Image (cartoon, rainbow, N blue to C red; front, top):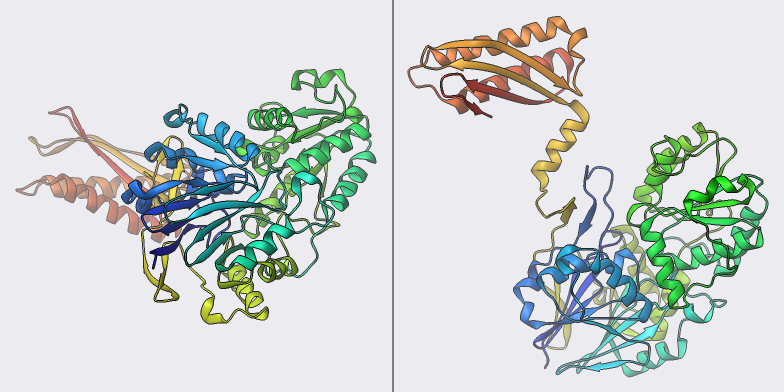
Length: 559
């Protein structure tokens, strides 16, 4: 019996950060390598990527990375993965081109070249498994599902998908291929759960295109459209509507320009008019009713860019009176509060807001009917819901049970769980490291819980700094304490509070200087403790307290 393990290293009990390891014999097949955008409480964090510890410890086994589509939740962490494990990368033509853009923009991997283009007809033979692919429908062309065929049966990973009977050719699902995979025997199905708890019918892309056209056609002033950069279907719909409404389109971000250029060169985007796109510097040459600004924001997320536009902080575009801001993304539950605040900012700037979800249920992910159809086509023995928070995974598990999969064969996993096929059964046997790795600037994984806790305290209660100079030899204070506060209280309006803190610091320092054995750590800790108690008693706040003590004789600073 071949050794077979399935290990979700991300993408379960969270939205995004998809990465799943399928270990067959002496080889590990990595399915997707995505990132996740941080929630508000992850202050200062740019993105969150998976923990690659298990894969790094077994690097000699990793056969390659197999990608389902070109969104950040599937390819965003690839540069960080390839930095330490430069293994072959497989994906459809568009997915590979977008992955190349991602990888080449990162200094450590810009010379990586081992990309391989596959399609729905490709089969790749390895010693213990065969990897093949099938076409799926998502909001980006060339999306694929992945089949890892083993002697025990196939492990199938759907990637992000939905079923749309009116989908255009580049977006169509291959139902015959799905039925064939199911007839050959599927041991385990890993299936997208993002929309599992919402029974409403998802609008077809044809309905969405009509909605986008109606919105753009009938507005009489400037339009700012917010979209995800890699949602090429939505971008195509916006281009078509702009051309039909005699508007010029301005692309505001470098990431968007690169993606559009790449998609146009591969004919995955069609330009409905030769002069549709204009450079941002030419905006003043056109009246507002002939302009459409397409904003996707940094790394493809537009909401924060809209906030900057509303607050006159954007580098190029400011929202003004009578603008229409058209939000064509569907926010996750975690982002709903942020979107609501953004809409409020836009209204304050004098503009109008419309969202694509006002009239339609819009999603690139299948609803419960789609999810059950996928199960009925593939007929898996075991089912592993993925890509979703716990409630979505649980809802998907219930859907699976209703089509005949017993609960004992359904696994609600958490990151790092190891499912092993032993003695004819798939079992949860152990776990591997699978923490979140946070990216902050150029730092990878150097921000931990302690730093995040300090950032949270600083954001809520500020910092309180006490600076003084002492002479240990003469056992005296050379310069009386100087107090600085940021984000805590305004010093000039709290003289009594400041004077009392100066007295506290002075008394503690003089006491410590009289001790036979002077200790820097003891002095600083006593200052922190005493100031902390006093400031909390007076303000009910707990700022970060930083004593800065300098010694005049040695000219050394002790922090």
